[in-house]
Length: 257
Image 1 (cartoon, helix red, strand yellow):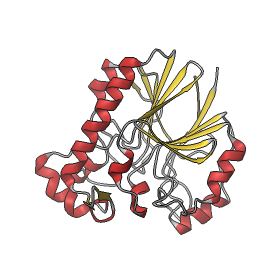
Image 2 (cartoon, one colour; image 1 turned 180 degrees about the vertical axis):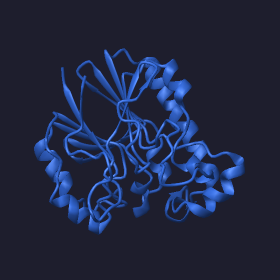
Image 3 (tube, helix red, strand yellow; image 1 turned 60 degrees about the horizontal axis):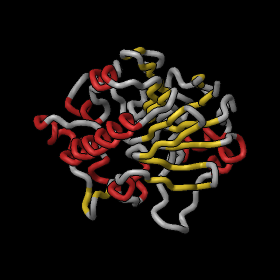
Image 4 (cartoon, one colour; image 1 turned 90 degrees about the vertical axis):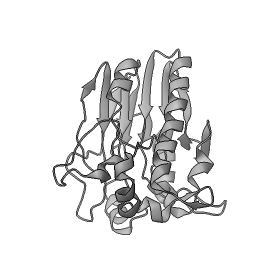
């Protein structure tokens, strides 16, 4: 039995939230820490600095695995540079950014992919106008466009299909940034922008043997503990707030595998 700790959406690039977080570090409760994206900007060059939290993770966990979220790319790292299989950036010997990459922990396999979402054609213009991704993320030498979301999602899904097909692990844990269930935040009226936050993968999850799925991105802690087929869903998002965490965030969310 191994205890995995998880969180997401720490947004350490956000100064007020980073300052709050410095006084409210996670309570170390697991051997391995899994972070489901939007932690910091990915380094765009070899001289780029990383936040002190990375060294803290290195000291306190045997291993820390981070999947890139959309905000990881706001610092100049091109989204296509991490898309090919087995992207593994070691920030420290035991702290790794992983995308479309699987890591074996004994007989437990952790499969990490940003996942992205599908944008319905009728919502493309709204996403293009309303999502800051399309103004801040580089995609192959140009800015990300609404139509790229679906292409990125298809690529990530193909990778996950193949990785799950090959896996012989006793326990499989999927870590994505984007939310694979249709969960609506009651603070907002549903609209086409939801396509950029959630993607309905319910049938996909039901058809695959996945023990646990950890996600983030919505800045809304709903779905924790939900069962989809044989899979238990998990989220523990800090999200934007200079006044503290969003409802449901805990400093010591864990799952036994």
